[in-house]
Amino acid sequence: MSTHAPTTPTPATPGKSMDAIMALCKRRGFVYQASDIYGGINGFWDYGPLGAQLKKNLREAWWQDMIMNPCWGRKGPGGERVRCVPVETCIIQHPKVWEASGHLAGFADPMRKCPGCGHFVRADQLRDVLKTQSEWVASLLNEFEALKQTQTFDRDRLTKWARGKGKKLAPNLALVTSTETTLSWLQERMSTWAINPMNDDEIIDYAATAQLQQTGLQQPCPRCGGVLGTPAPFKLMFETYAGIIQTDDNKVYLRPETAQGVFLHFKNVVDSTRVKVPFGIGNTGRSFRNEITPRNFTFRSREFEQAELEFFCHPDESFEWYKFWRDFRMEWWQSIGLAGENLILREHAKDELSHYSVGTSDVEYRFPFTAPGFGELEGIAHRGNYDLTQHQTHSKVKLDYFDTTRGETLPNGGKKGERYMPHCIEPAAGLDRGTLALICEGYTVDPSRPSPEILKLHPRIAPIKAAVFPLMDKDGLPEIADKLTDDLFANFGRLGFIESDAKQSIGKRYARMDEAGCPYCFTIDGDSAKDQTVTCRDRDTGQQMRMSIDKVVGFVGEKLGV
Ligand code: ATP
Image (tube, rainbow, N blue to C red):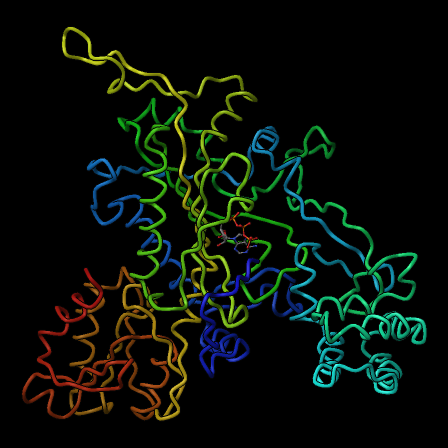
C-alpha cells in the first residue's frame, strides 16, 4: 500500500472510524467476511445484497464510461472520438503468459521472517507496519515522548519499561532480553541527542540492537521485537494444476491482473473488428494475489476485482494520451462521489517508475486507515510497447500493427502506411478499493439527526435507488404505495433496488434507508389519496418536500442521470 504524506495534512473526518464502517457494512449487508461461519479466511471478503449491487453499479459505471461511451463522448488529444471495445478473458491462461509478462520471475515481495515468533513482514512495508500496527512500538515511543522533552537518557525509566510492558509486549526485543548492553548503546547515542536528534525509526532500531558493534543497527519484528531475518522473495501468484496429473508440467496460475488477457488478444481484436489504432480494450474480472499481509478490510485482499483498460496508440502520440487518460480517470472518480480533498492524483517520481514506463500516476484516496496519507485506488501507467513486445518475443507471433493512415502520401492521394508496435496507456482500477472508498467517503455521522449514521452514496452508484413508505397500513395508502413502487421498479429496477416498507415508525424506516445509502424516500400519507401528492425526503439533508405522484419517476430519473 502506498501511503503518501499529503502536502497539507488534514485529519480524518471525526467519526469515520474503520470499526464503525465495518460494523455498518456487516449490519446492512454490504460486506461479510468470507467463510464467516467457519471463523473467516484471511484476505477474502464477500459482498452481501447491498454490497453486491453497489459494486455492480460501480463496475457498470466504469463499463459505460470507459467502453460503451468512453469519456462521456469527449474527444481525444487529436480531436478524434475515443474508441474502446471489451473482452472477457480467463483467470487461468497458458503459464508462458506469466513468463512473458515478467510475473513469474519478478512478481514477488521481499519478505522478512522473525526467527523468534515465525511472523512474516513485507520488507518494503516494515517501517509503516512498525509505526502503525505494532503494540510494543507504540508503547516504547510513548516512553520516549517524555525523554524527547528533556533530551536526556533515563536509565531507570527505560529499565522499568523493559521489565514491565516491554517484557509483556515484546519478549524477544533486545531491550528486554539484554537490557544492560542495549541501554549502554542507547545511552551513548542519546548523549549527542541535542545536536543530532533521533527519529522514531532510529529509536526502534536501537531498542532491537544488543551488540551494535558486531551487527550494526537491527530491525525488529513488529509482533515480538525479535531481530528480523534478511529479505527473501515470496511469490505472490496462486498456483494450481490443470488436469488430473499434478506435476510441474500441468502447473497453472491464477492471474494476478486482468491486463495480460487483453494483450494476448490485441491481434485477434484488430483482425476481427473494425477498430483502428488509437483504440482501447477493456476487461473486468477477478485477480488473485497471495498477499502476505492482507489488511485494512477489503483494501488489500487475496481475491479482488479489477477494471483495466489497455489503450493502444502511436508512440508519437502516447504521452498526450497518457495525460488524457490520467486526467479523465481523476475526473471520473470525482463524478461518482469522491470529489474533494480526500482524492488526489499523484504523479510518480522518476525513481518509482518501472524500467519501461515514461509516466505513471495514481489516483489515491485518503482512507480512514491511511489518513493523513493516501492509498492507491487506480494506477494510470504509460507502459510503452513493453507488453506487446514481450508477448511477440515469447509467442513468436507478430503483434505489430500496420497503420494505413500514416506514412508518405502516395501519388493517388492515399498513404503508404506505417508498421509499428503500438504503445499502451493502462488505467488499472480496483473495484473493491473503489467500493470501499465510496463507502468511506459516504459514511457520515451527524449527531443532530435522530439516527446519526448516514451513507451518502452518489445516486448513480447507490444500491437502493428509492424507497416508498405508506405512512399507515390502511385507508388505501398501501395501494397507492404499491402503484408507485411498480412504476419506480419498471423504470429503475434494472439499476438497483426499489424498497417498499409499511412496518415500523416512519423515523425508523428513514433511518434504515439512510444507513443503506438510499438517496430518496417517498412517503404516502392521508393527503396523498386526496391530492395525488407524496412527500419526498432527501437522505443528505433530511429535508422533505411535497411533489405530485406523477412527477416522482421523472424526478428520480433526473437524479440518477438516466
Ligand atoms: P499496491 O501497491 O497497493 O499493492 P499495485 O500497484 O500492485 O497496488 P496494480 O497492480 O497497479 O496495484 O493494480 C491495479 C489496481 O488493482 C490497484 O490500484 C488496486 O485498486 C487494485 N488492487 C491491487 N492489489 C489489490 C489487492 N491486493 N486487493 C484489492 N485491490 C487490489
